[in-house]
Length: 387
Image (cartoon, rainbow, N blue to C red; front, side, top):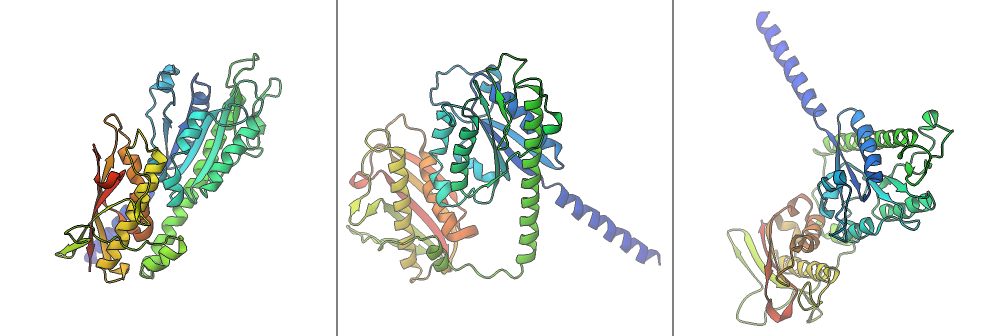
C-alpha cells in the first residue's frame, strides 16, 4: 500500500512539474518605436505596462535606428536598444509606435520597414498580432497615419488589434484628448495639461493589455495545434512547397572551368554559386557603390535559387532527400566601410527556411570581399546533408 502511495505521489509531482514547465513559457511582445522628443516613448512605456499586466507576458521596448545618425534624441530614448528587421519574426506580438509626420508614420519607421522584403517573401510575420499607437503635435492626421501603417502590416498578413472604445470609462472629457478607435495617440502639442495626458496613457495601457491577450491566445492555440498534429504530421513535400509559394527553380548553372557544380562526400553536398540569371550576372558590381542594398538582396535571392537548383541535381531530381542545410556562407563584393552583410544574407536564409522548413535551419557566416568572380555582388557557399 505504501509503495502504491509513493508511486502516486511521484506521478502527482511529475504532473505539477510538467504543468509548471508549460506555464513558464512566456508570451514575448515587442514594443518598437521611433521617438525624438520622447512623447511616443512615454506612450510606449504605458503600452509595455499594459502588456506585462497580462499573465505570463513579457514586454521588450526597443527603437528603430535614426536615418540621421547625428539627430539629437531624448536622453531616455537614446538609451533604448536598437532593433534590426530580422528579429521581428522572433516575437509573439508587436506594438509599433511613431510620431505623426504629414498624416503618415515617421520617415525613420518607414525606412526600417523598407528592409522587410525578406520577411514578407518568407511570410515570417504572417499571423502575428500587432497594434499601432502614435504621438501627434497638432493631432491632425493621426487616424490617417495609423491606417496608413495598417496597410503595411496587413501586407505582411499580421493580425491587427484596434482599440475600439476601450478606455472610455477613464476618459477626462474636460481636456482635449488624442484617442482614436484605431489606436492610442497623444496630442503632444496641446497647451492644456501635461502630455501624454493620463487618459491617453490609460488607453495606451489598455491597448497593450489587449495586444498581450491576443498574442497569448494565438500562441497557446499554436502550441495546442502543434501537440495535436505532431504524431499525425505528414512528411513535408518540397515540390509542393515550391509550387505553393510560386518558387520556380532555374536551370542549374553549368561549370565554365575545370570543376564540377557540386561534390558529395559522406552524405554532404558542397556547392558554390554566384548571382547568375539567364546567362548573365544579376545586378553586378560593388554593394555600397554601384549596387543598392535592394539589388544586392535580389542577387542574393537569385544565388540561393541557383544553389537549390544544383542541390536538386545532386539529389537526383528529388529535393525531398535533403536531411539538413548544414551551413551557408555568403561572400559580398562591398566597399570597405560597408557593414550590413548579414541583412543581405537574410534573403538566402529566409528562402532556405521557406523551402525546407525545419530542415532549412542552418549555421551561417557572412564575409565582405574586395571583389568576386565575374563582378558578381554575391557568392554563396552551401553545405547540405542528404540521404
